[in-house]
Image (cartoon, rainbow, N blue to C red):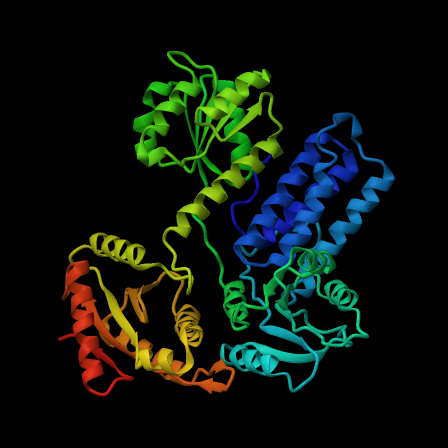
Length: 533
């Protein structure tokens, strides 16, 4: 199999179309598998770009494709199956073209000349409401507009056509007994296949949520959850999630099998390293630091189960995913192998698409579990311990002349906000500052919730003067951000202190100096940014 281009979006679209055309022309199973790989790669790229509508379309087509992979005798596919897949492929490409700015037309035989086209996401959000005077719709619209979204208020009975597709559609319950909400949602889904559809205020009962999902809703937000949380979800949609490449250690004594496995993983953009001697396993784990191990069951010196049992006794590897590979089909033996520490069992010869799917799913869950221990539940920012660890690593990696800035931020008079409006509104103010920091700062900047209403920020390659200017603009914007509550809206401010590396050369010295500058900002009247001496 040929390998996919590593990153560019246009190349992925080109690969998907050309591999489909090659299969339609020749009908070979290997070409069909290459088409499936290209489709999976495109879905992963959309996932990193946080385009769930397009991910959903890719996965729907991928499910249809996978039905035809297991049986070699089914190829070439018949005219009926080809037409069905072509229809889904056309729908995917049509949604791609209506969900991004127009690009120059290129012939099918013309290779892309641009290495990577940045996806420019629509900033339009439709709010579907029972009436123009709806308080929830008004509050959401004000906050979304503050963050630069173009908000259009629609009634449940109007489904626009011929418009630019929105990033998201927000449904507020209709309160109209004569309206079939599910039918209208399905109509919006058909009109906006690549958009993210939210329903606000669903009862916490599984049946209505399932009915909404079947109609086309992507996210159903329970009635007891703050409606403003949807703003955070929409802000997440415009973030691009750049992930480190997946890393797999292959423990396999057969050079042919190891080469085939690594080739399959490379087709899916997964980095791998292979060892044939399990005796070097611990040293390799320390050096390579994989996200998953593909472990052969039978090897010289000791078998895969014994190697796994050793790893499970070490705290560093107790949760590392381990997938067994073996030609053994004895169910009792497989159960025993899983009981002794493995996560899954794949039979040789393996289906390459299934192998890649298992690897990516296991690694995705492993990384999400690791991430959940580092993220603050209220804001989605780094928590206290993770922020401190990241700052320590930044300081140690910067060298004596490295330049970056640390800032400590604290919301002014926060206790009086909680006492006057209640803790749910106080939480909303904290989230509002977190949203603003995520929206205004760079992806490589450190942003963490240090505790309570206090935040920490670190800006690489920035001196204190520039950091003070950036934070001062954010301070001004935050003071103008409305925080809605049942009685209307309130406004809050924050104070900040800034310190710089290398003037302060340890993580502890940087945070202490920034804290002292923050105290000075508060003593000078609050709602200001001060720099450490």
